[in-house]
Image (cartoon, rainbow, N blue to C red; front, side, top):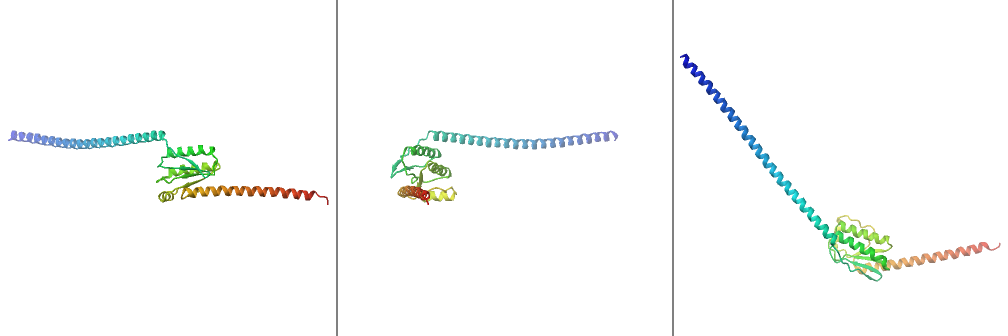
Length: 226
């Protein structure tokens, strides 16, 4: 009876130890499974982030390549403008859509042409230009300011309703800019302005001569003996 009890207790201890070991094994297996799931998710996230980074890098490289191609194209772009003189004015007809680089080219050509001519003014005809953004308008605005500093008047003509609306909606600077609907209107304005300037100059000269004569007469009267 005592010997059977000893075997039974030994069996119970072994059984308890085995169950405990199985529980530990199960717990460890569960922990390993959860760790593997976490590592798998982390690995998947890393692959996703890598793909996103590679895609962003590829997009940046493509953007840089596009900017480089555009820069090279602008640097080699040459625009032909058939400027001509009529009624004492230089007319600059823009016959195509412009890039910023092309607009600067036109600006340089105008400034180079003006000193070599005897002009009453400059007309920049934008009839063929369908779209003007803030960059192009700034180039044209500065061009008119440069023309004024050289001593000439300028008129921008040919602005279509869509371009006018864009200029207003974009709140672009329109101060000190003279515009006309058509080329003929611009030429007429510059001609009249030139005639008015000549008339005012002649009037000022006449007044100056009269002042000199009056001053001389007054001096003569003051020098007569009492």
